[in-house]
Image (cartoon, rainbow, N blue to C red):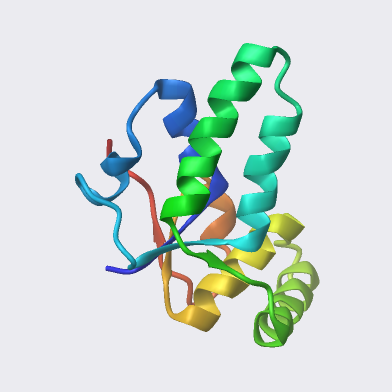
Length: 135
């Protein structure tokens, strides 16, 4: 099943020392993607590393991700869906973070489920398939 991978999954992988292959039961495939905002979040993590060693280790990890998994650019179709979701969720008092809105809209436009540890936020999005990793 095709999935858009949320930053929370990569953060957990880095913290736990697990290999990237665990995402797809041993091999990353083109059926996986990340939103451009997820790339930004991951690169921000590199920039805020508190030691040179951590920065290097994190940078290598993130660059492997960015060179392996396709990154979905934010375009007008995604922006339209994001704006509609934002208005709907805020209007019902169930708003979620802006970065998660961008990722959710990206997944909806592309027909992908979201793989995330942040299930509580993403489950608020109507029509979005949400999967929590089982490893």
